[in-house]
Image (cartoon, rainbow, N blue to C red; front, side, top):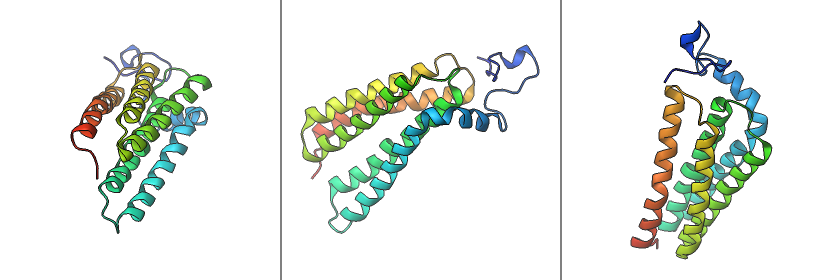
Length: 179
């Protein structure tokens, strides 16, 4: 696959700058961020929440608190920010506000259900959250479906890793319940 440019043509068609070269990705991020900012807002809030959970649960040395803090920071927080940034940079057009809102709701409600269900040992709640997360990841992949290049390929690899970790986490929650 060839790198896509801002004009939608491949780099082989002319001497245009590839989509994610130099400062062009910053321009695309700036242009797309108003619609996708909720990924960043909720992602940052989850990172802060994870830090607060870690601080509150550290004295108790709680397995649930440690897991919840890591999950909030890495999955609900950092991964969500990556979803928003990547879609702002790689989406060939502006995603609709409805599509973005559905994706943000699926991702955040899914994460909340996974954390709650796992923390209290109610597996069906965690499984329902897992399905919502998978729905959000499918929408993320769909948003960048027509974009080529190494960076977009790396984003797709991240989506696959996240998607594969969902059933793994569900199985682990059953095999090794948190104390």
